[in-house]
Length: 277
Figure 1 (cartoon, one colour):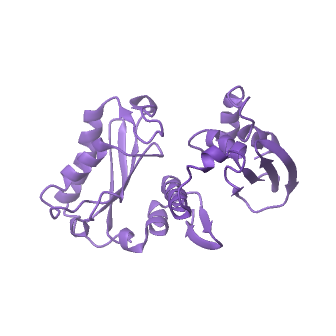
Figure 2 (cartoon, helix red, strand yellow):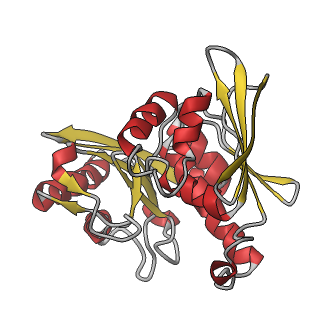
């Protein structure tokens, strides 16, 4: 990413909406993003922020140091391919927000969960999370969803999965689901993505669990990592403040397609097949 795009991405709060369209185009060309850089702008305003962005063509790094929304330093240097974000002294200049921060363990768990979801939604990108000097997450970025699952969610969960894939009309389903004998005690390992965005969906949860009816022990829940791809005009992401919930324009079609894929697994007797991983 060049220096101009970096400054747009981390621009000041007062003019970020004015430059949003230009920033969106620059970000889309540089690396995939979910929220168009708005969270990064907010982060730069409230923290001391070091952001080196690599330039794949020029093989140079754009390094920005921002404190309280002000650019303190900008430079170029050689670097490996990728983007590194370093945040220090979180909310140092906004004590009212700092007051509502939870314990370090809780905040670290939230960051770790976010990176897990990003890794699972973009298996072609390698993510590394370092906590207190220790590497707690490192995905290979080889483009294989199964590799990202293995790295982000663990070997035991990965080895309990079987693949599922299908397409019908404007809806396609691809991912992995657990075998019935590997039911879990909660729904925490049900991970859904729609067009690459992590969501929580009662509709998809219902379709998943309906497919396991009479196949799983009472009190147990199936796990999954499912990518659902639909036309952009079939889904509305602006129904939840955190954009974790979405609304489908044709819920019946979505439900039937997802449910039919789970039925197909049972029809082909893949529940007891050899572990995929």
